[in-house]
Image (cartoon, rainbow, N blue to C red; front, top):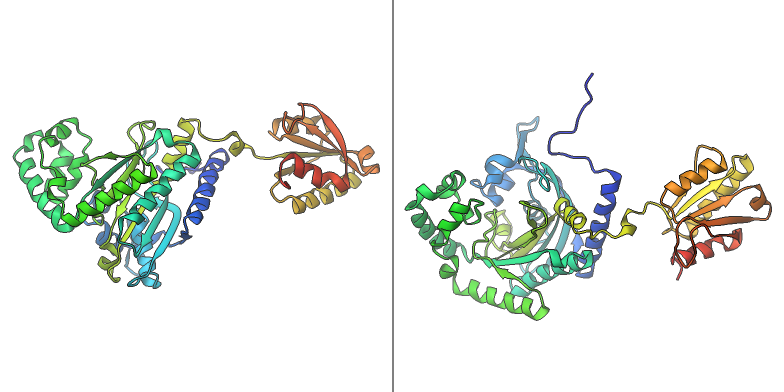
Amino acid sequence: MANIQAIRGMVDLLPEQTAVWQYVEQIMAQLTAAYGYQEIRFPIVEQTELFKRSIGEVTDIVEKEMYTFEDRNGESLTLRPEGTAGCVRACIQNGLVSQGTVQRLWYSGPMFRYERPQKGRQRQFHQIGVEAFGLASPDIDAEVILMTARLWQRLGISDHVTLQLNSIGSLEARANFRQALVEYLSENKDRLDDDSLRRLESNPLRILDSKSEETQKLLDGAPDLFDYLDEESLAHFSSLKKLLNAAGVSYEINSRLVRGLDYYGKTVFEWVTDKLGAQGTVCAGGRYDGLVEQLGGKSTPAVGFAMGIERLTLLLQATASVPASVQDRIDVYVVAGAEESLQCATVGLVEQLREALPGLRILKHCGGGSFKSQMKKANKSGAKLALILNEDELSSKEVTLRFLSAFAGEELGEHRRVSFDLLAHQLGTLFALNS
């Protein structure tokens, strides 16, 4: 009988990978808390209509990428392809957004899109998202961008990402620009790639980020979106740029950046890298002032972003930005004789250490074996320190500490005896847990 395999595009995360994911998630949780954002969690399955109304029925996501099915009651349900729509629905339903209410929220979890799997793009992928509701001024746009800039700084990848910035204006401005763009492109249909031809009538603004070199050359002579922006959007964008300049955040203006979802307006941005090949967008977002009202709530300004954890961890690995300590599984490997009295004493001692030093990562050897075989496993474990308890140590109520790596000023192979009473303090000092 053939082994059952994972579904194509839905991959397993093995322990060596989850360590990096936990590192990213921990830093992001600390960062959002520092900026005053609270976590929200919402279902991975929503009514299909939610995504049709928010993302747009003529977008690639809704037309051909969503995992949609009917439940036993005949209701059309969809695995969420992105997080903003579900977050907005949850806020409306639970009364978190109303006139004058400000909410700063973040979330993380799996999203689903039926795409061709490739490096950095899976059918089940994971995102961390941030959404801010109730603030219309450009300083909140600056805040969410500054948060991402600080994240790159914390992760050590600031030199490997570039901020691209644009304004796509009001609905009326985009409608006027769209008409001019369609007229121009219609006169040059013979130079458009197949994908752009398909989008010409349904979603022509997406042609602006076509990957076709010939189409991009054609767009050099196309109308410029900035020429159609309304005064309010221009003033908003000007203020945003001044705020970013004041904070020392560099950016590039990309007038062809429009984002792929219908709900965006005014500010849009992407953080891109050249370290991941074709999958160069690490984080993207913008302002979506009309979405709350569009989904049945009261008119509420909003802005946010989402970043793919898969691509972010790939970037960390590609740029050697993962600290060595992230891959460390344990600090102390505990070796003890097989005698029942030793095993009982060791269990009690280890549990006392875990109680006193909850930040210490301790692996107790299980399954018996000779002292020599246990020490071989201790050396292979990656632990910095072995804690050894034999009959001689037990009789004097001491343990032997053997340094398996050079750290805390001690040489590799050095060892010392420590009494039971002082062990927690000694380990806390060595691992800087009680300083």
